Image 1 (cartoon, rainbow, N blue to C red):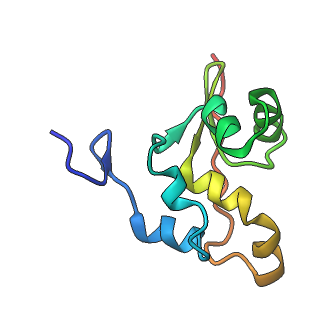
Image 2 (spheres, rainbow, N blue to C red; image 1 turned 90 degrees about the horizontal axis):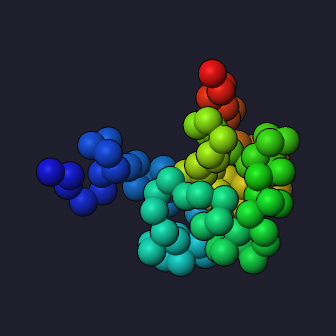
Length: 105
């Protein structure tokens, strides 16, 4: 049985999520979305298309992981993308936190 704040038996780092949204602009709006979002979820949230989200993921501009042909974007990856310009100016507090793309077999 999963506890609140867990995904698949793993604990979600709420402090890290809050730190990734220093202005508190996005987390409350993301509450209804799953922690690991599909490109369709991200597109609905950002007002773009899922194709554009897949392009950002493919170019490495947005953090995510690819499992077979399916992309998943953690909320932390979306928040890092939304604040990327500010992080470049102020310096990244977590260093390089890129997620690796899983290879297709």
